[in-house]
Structures are given as C-alpha cells and as structure tokens.
Image (cartoon, rainbow, N blue to C red):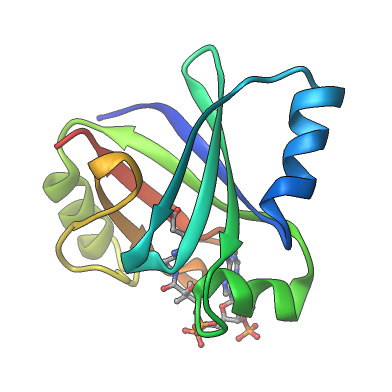
Length: 133
Ligand code: CMX
C-alpha cells in the first residue's frame, strides 16, 4: 500500500541559510519554494530520484515547527510516505491503535492530501501519509 518515502521533513530556523548546505555542499537542486498557510510553514523541496527533502521554516510562533525547534533545535521533523489510498492507510493505522492527528486528510504542500500520525503512537517518529489528490 505504501509506495515509497515521499519526503523527509527537516525543521530549520532559516530556510535561506539551510538551503545553502543542501545546494552548495550536497549539490541538490531546490525545485520548489512554497508557503503552506494551513501549517504555518515555509518550505523548500529538493528532489533526489523521487524522494524529497522538505526544509521547514515556521511562519508563526504557534507553528508545529516553531514548537519543535524550541524544544529540540533543528533536525528531522517527520517522515512522509506516499500512498494511493490515504483513507485506507488511516483506517488501518487507527485500527492498529495509532493516534491520528488528522482523522480526515487535509491539503498540504503541493496541494497533496496529507494526514499525520502522532509520534507518541509511532515509536517517536511523526509520520505522514500523503497522496496526490
Ligand atoms: N517528532 C517526534 N516527537 C515530537 C514531534 C516530532 N516532530 N513533535 C512533538 N513531539 C513530541 C514532543 O517532544 C512531546 O513529547 P514529550 O511529551 O515526551 O515531551 C510530545 O510529542 C508532545 O505532544 P503533544 O503535546 O500532543 O503536541 P505538540 O503541541 O507538541 O504537537 C504534534 C506535536 C506532532 C501533535 C504537532 O506538531 C502536529 O500536529 N504535527 C502535525 C502537523 C505538522 O507537523 N505540520 C508541520 C509540517 C507541515 C508540512 O510538512 O508541510
């Protein structure tokens, strides 16, 4: 049911500063910059053979990313898996005892349907399902 790792989300203090590492040191190309109002983040996406790195900068103090950085500093924030049946994936997770942050998918970066599982029910990793809408 899961197709691949779609992206790894990395919380950063400054998108512009962090971009320099991914572009100049790792040699990746920034393919898209996008502000996602619903999530209060600015994002930069880098493609590596179909798997992406998503840099996340908070746009408001109440943003999930701002809270994460306040507690942990910069670092890996979530892993997103691509699925072609997000509803079924959520149902399965719920039936298996996972805590759903979103009972129904919401629209995230790139206009994709996304939904998150709480890290306290996934062995410490904030887990996202995403699906082309
Ligand atoms: N990874 C692992 N653990 C995390 C975490 C993360 N990214 N974010 C929070 N936690 C942990 C905290 O450290 C805390 O642990 P302790 O209780 O041991 O101290 C616990 O989860 C807190 O949980 P909470 O009180 O339920 O919730 P918070 O207010 O801290 O919010 C979360 C956490 C995951 C529910 C919230 O960040 C959320 O809803 N995330 C989903 C949406 C999101 O992350 N959007 C930004 C990215 C959007 C995009 O990719 O475009």
